Image 1 (cartoon, one colour):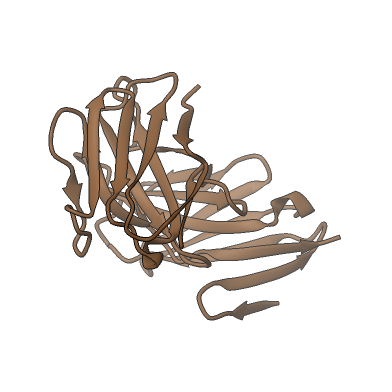
Image 2 (image 1 turned 120 degrees about the vertical axis):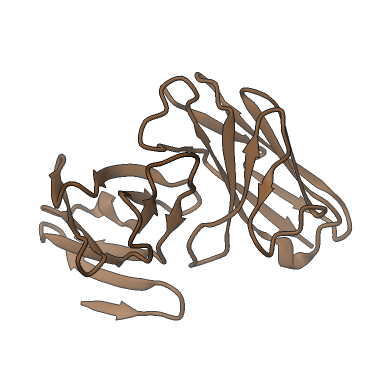
Amino acid sequence: GAVVSQHPSWVICKSGTSVKIECRSLDFQATTMFWYRQFPKQSLMLMATSNEGSKATYEQGVEKDKFLINHASLTLSTLTVTSAHPEDSSFYICSARDSQTWVNNEQFFGPGTRLTVL
Amino acid sequence: GESVGLHLPTLSVQEGDNSIINCAYSNSASDYFIWYKQESGKGPQFIIDIRSNMDKRQGQRVTVLLNKTVKHLSLQIAATQPGDSAVYFCAENMNSGYSTLTFGKGTMLLVSP
């Protein structure tokens, strides 16, 4: 149980285009999901907290108009990188909390999405 | 031995050795701590957790030690295997409300046969 999937697992796009990444909780409901970014040989940095049915909460320094988050259902959050540039190339990871059995703030992580912007 | 690279410290051990990975956490108000293992190109995988009312917790081949006085956390892996090679992150959290996880910098563990 407690499986989180991401799609796509990797994507290559041209500079200036937008890319959408999906995060799904497969066997549980998640009112709260999180989006992280990880550059090579670095740690995970929280970008934003995605709340079902309401606006996302962005961390300081993360542009909300560039990284659009939509959490329209209890099992799906999407992150859209708008007007992507090479510096947005990174590993994007989502996580989700189980709304029913939320214990110790435990988060279940997805497998990540590798974004490369040419 | 242990070395500090440009971004990621590395611990190199021989198969069968015991490994100790250290982490200094930042928030004295944190009361829940987690160790994650991350293999190349994958998401973090939960290893073990500990609450602040404990100073030691054991799992299968792994032990986490917590020293709140100096805000230090360690992960001990017994009889390290090549499959343990990965990057290990500690994460801290406040077990209240909807607080978020803060990840440490990570340590790369390299296990040679």
